[in-house]
Image (cartoon, rainbow, N blue to C red; front, side, top):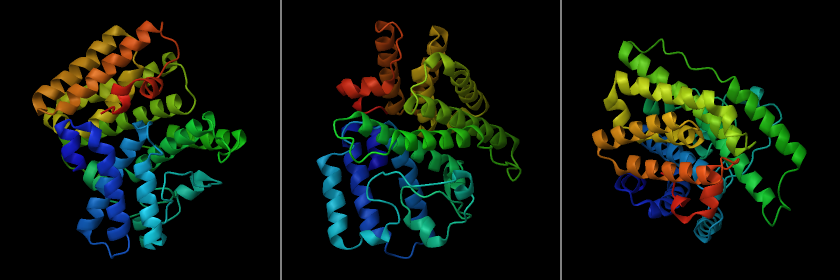
Length: 326
């Protein structure tokens, strides 16, 4: 239902289906032995959910989420979850060291939202999405740290971490994101597949850095333009080499959205617009058109604000139509 909602353009129900999927997995999936089919479905859920959490601000503590959390807790099955029942910060001391920790089967399968750092040899993210698990885990960490920042800036900051802890964790994530190596693609025999995947991974990693600097440090967009251009260049290379891969995958929307929102040059705006228009036309998916409409609204708002340090997050908090980004 999440996939149907995404591709049909009925975005208002997306949050509901994600939370219901979480309830189903925690109550019916985590307590059982996982077959390969179950693990594939779990990986698909986690990847899509973390992408959703990275751009979903409003309603993060909604009544629906609290209700599902209470249902899991009262069922007695919550102890099968090795992560918290809400997106929370995991207390790490040395992320580099902990990312190299080998995770056992139970740890890897029941840490639903990748709350704990560690290496899992049998992860299925490369097989399904072409993305390594450390990228997904880092996106989860940044999204959660961003939620911590929002909470600290809100009315009730009593349960938030200290400024010292926040800065320390942000620095750790920054170092890891900037030194995250691209995976070896030696096992990919096809030259075309090799080039497409390499460009896709490069776009994803540059977009992750843009997301981090804007979400956590609110860095001025002018300092991020090189990474924005790199994302655009890599997306166009993928499009040029194998347009079917790009137009048939909504997974390319996230890096395109994150980078396009920070673009300052009107010519770059036009290039991103063309990419979204081509993707919508060739794929027939309305999500590309809707995302472009949101991006164009963000560009317009920035222009009206004389390019002050305003982000899509600011607009999302104050503008109802932007509450469902893509």
